[in-house]
Structure formats: C-alpha cells, structure tokens
Length: 463
Image (cartoon, rainbow, N blue to C red; front, side):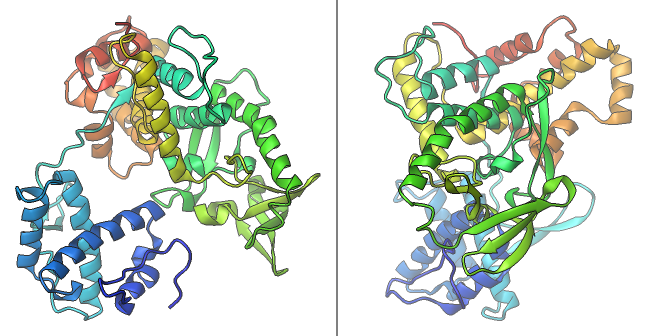
C-alpha cells in the first residue's frame, strides 16, 4: 500500500504501523473526504486509540462499554482538564463510527463499539444514529460581522489603518493587498476557506463590464465540500482587489522566484500547454516526465491545483492565485494565522475606541455573507417588486423563499443548517418579521437592528 504525501497514518506507542488502518486511510471512502476532514477525523481517532492503550487495549478490541467510559472522560470527568462539548463529541463520534463500520464490514471486528438505533428522519424515513450522540450540541462559537464592521476589521487588521482611517506608519504587515483581496472574496461570495484559497488565476472572472456589481464564476467539483460544481458570485470590489493584487505584488513574487530558479527546481509540476473545450476549462498538460494528458478544471483537487504551471515570458509561473513571498502557493490552512493576527491587531488598536473590537475568521465570512444575503434578498423583494405581505407569501410558494436561495449559495445540503446555524440571529431571536415587514429600512439599517438584538453579531459602533 502506498502512502502519498498528506495521507494520515497511525502508529501505535511501540512505533508500529497497523496495515489495516493504513488500508482504511488510503483505500476506503475515507480517502475521498476533504483533506481537513481527514485530518480532523484522524486526530479524533487517535485520542480514542490512546485512551484504549492506557487501558491495555488495541483499537480493534474496543467494545461499547469502552466508548461509554471514553465519553465520560472526554465530556464530564473532573480528572480531565480539557473536557469537550456536545458538538466536538459528535464529530469524534462520527469519526469513530465511520472507522468501525468499515472495520466490521472488512470482518476485522465482530461488532462496532458505536451502538446505533433507528429514528425517524426529517423526510419520514428511518435512519440509524449513534446512541451516544450528544443532544446538547450547539454552535455557540458562531459569530457574524455586518459589512461595515467587516470593513473596519479588514482596514485596521489587514491593511494597516488606524481607528480613524489613516495609514499606520508603524504597520509592518506584508501582503496587505493579497490578504485584503482574499478576505473580500470570502466575505462577498460565501466560499469556504479552501474553496477561495485554491482558486486559479484563470478562474478569476473578467472585470471588463464596469456597470455590474457582481460577477459569476465557477468552483471546481473537487474543491467543494459537497463535490458538486457550483456557481459563485464575486463583488466588483473584490474582483478589483484581486486584479490589483495579480498585477502588483503577485507579479513581483513570481518574478523573484523566476530570478532564483525556484520553479525549475520544483518537482511534480504539470505544465499547461493550452486550454480548450467549453469555457476553456479543458487543460492540456505535460508532466515533468514528458507525459501528455488532459484534465478538466473541475476534476482537479486542491493538491493537484498546486502543481499547475504555465510557461510565461520570464519562465514558469504558477496558476495558483494566492502566493507566498517566495512565489510558492500559499496554502489554504495558512489563512487562519493571517486572520488571527489581523484580529489581534484590531483588539490592540480598537480597544476603548469601539464598543466591540471585531474578531474575524475565514469561516465567519460564510456566516456573515449568509446574514447579509438574507437581508439583501428580502429587502430587494420588498423594494423592487413592492409586494404586499400576501403577495410575498405567494411569491415564496411559487419561487421559494430567501432561506432557500441562501442555502444554495452556501452549498448546504440541508436548509435546516442554513436556518439553525448560519442565520441564527434571525431564527433564534424570532425577528423574521423585521426582515419581512419593515418596508422603509435599508439593508444596513436591518443589519444594525439585528446586531443590537444579538450579542453574536458585531456592527461598527463607537464607544
């Protein structure tokens, strides 16, 4: 069995690799999960394996009572200083359920320690769920920024401005144009961190028509969590920021790398010789061994996209959009550190100057996008069509409501997820009437009112 770079594998306390677990991580459905999911599930399983080892058992000797003891230790034991909540437990349970279901199917074990029961699903069908699934799972860490609070976070945290809108002469941050452009893309499109972080330069929409506010683009199937190709919308502001970055600091990073021969020294590159097919999405490639082949953009996963290069005037250059200072692809997980540093800068500079210094993460961009789009869509229905409350109900029955539209934009499988988590300020606070019936308020006013009612929504408010 071959373990490729990036594949997780398990080693026991004696340094031995179990070939069965390697088979699971490389040759089962697990191998086709998103990279972040694979990494998280591997970490979750390791915690349980270590717990078993401390009780003299191997992973394949786990029984239902061991899982009960593990749950008690993870969630409630006073001897554990790092107890977890229901949401984290459910993810760990999902990781173990997947592994042990596979092990039973391969007859490595007679029964899974994850006991299940049948319950009625949302559509009236019977589904199996773990008995140990937590019922107190809540997304308590979910937070939102309004557009003006986001702009404050971006300008102060990423672009090096002060609270009063002036350039901070002491700011020593690098890549401020790249970082702000990436952040704008996520905030205006609702893309996930890895979706926006794995874009190629040839996927950036053309900004030729200056009269438009939004431009549509496509996300490749293998970069999305749902493994479905989908359309996303970029704001004109975000596209301008992306184009400025590509023409300035990105070009400079490429030129520095070319001058040092960095790209020629890299291994495993795929050179794009030409493009063809519908919307030029069929790539004609040559490997470093001279093999000629074709791949459609939608079939390329995040790791494969990092291998794509073209022959430019100055030599090889990457198609990967976001680059580090040395010209190499800036990997999606690295954005977390960029956002943390920006939030810390906001905390230091804005403490005492605003009532709530903004904190922001890549995933919060999706939450904030969802809330903004809901308010925008509802306001557009009210003002553009002048619908009465009854006409609004008829419109929703015929075309679907705004929650469903936002659900599709976010690429959620369930509308319930969109309502219960991403749009909790509206659902939990029961202010849907605020969005449906207040004809005079604009989108900014609506979001400001929601922010006043929810401590988890941050708006720009001076102290």
